[in-house]
Image (cartoon, rainbow, N blue to C red; front, top):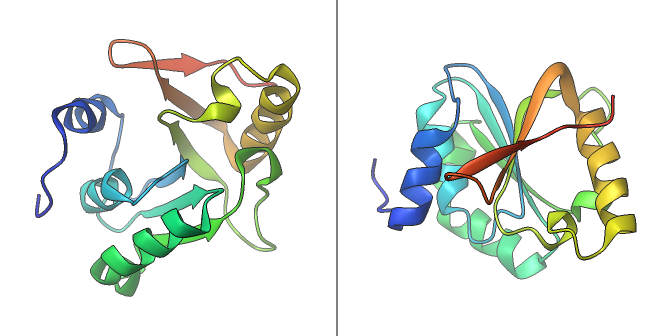
Length: 143
């Protein structure tokens, strides 16, 4: 891996069920370190990194020229509770959210909306993994 991750993010990366060709949605991507590392692990797959912060998306874009150029990574400024697939966009196999306020239980109405939006963006067997386990836990999605 070309970029050194924090020990915590490295542990999360190793725990993710990533495979070649997967489509991964990272919710709350921040500056994009985990998104870039996932893009490296999924070969010809694709990572869509989203964050509600324009600054974070600018950081992802600025630091990910190689991954974006290869078509393995894109970034979009949108909140989890407002996310929707673009017309013609394929659903995702996996969603990952690390330290995302919309999913931390403090705002149940926002969390419910976010979970519905995430579920709608995943394949029928798609999974949502968030921090707070050892190191991750799976969230049951409304289907």
